Length: 253
Image (cartoon, helix red, strand yellow):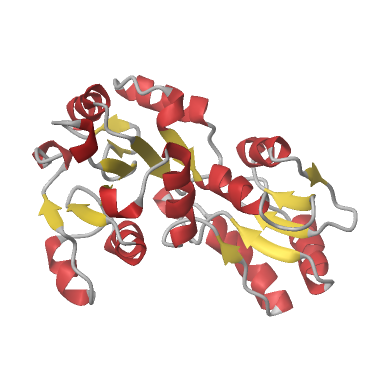
């Protein structure tokens, strides 16, 4: 296949390549083939609390060696978004991976008169964080969140749930950077120098991965190894371009 004919690929992680920390059969073969073919590739996650090296180690533990530069997170996309905004001081609720990306983007992390309140995933959420964040947002700080997911495995609270009390207290909704926002798609495309009309997205969730790809003009591939089932397709007004049982059935890229 000639380079000019190759599709760029954005691939989700959970439900597509991994179940928890176990490899989905065929994921290693698929990813290694795509890398060897030279397709532009982004392995994309809404989860902002892991760095590229953390994700590299997660995959290595599952038995697949993926270089760190192929990973892209909602924390990285949030930093890319923030670089385009006026102001450089942020009050952050999140883990080190998020603050690391914001520091790299030139932001000062502070609880003194911040320009932004930025919320990601964290297990250390507390009353003081809610109170400060709500006060700053009420006083005019812009409200940004890495992703709208409400919960993870075993009902672990995710970013959207952490934003909820701040929204209720202030009456202001955050701008969500991650899926299904098309901002994270644009940021991922910019990372690899790709264009939407030449890119496909592989995901397991109709209402995030596939909806986002549809809105951004990407070719969409739904795998049935995760969140969405074949029956769910009739309940949404958009249809994936391709439907496969799992990643190992994608032999057309």
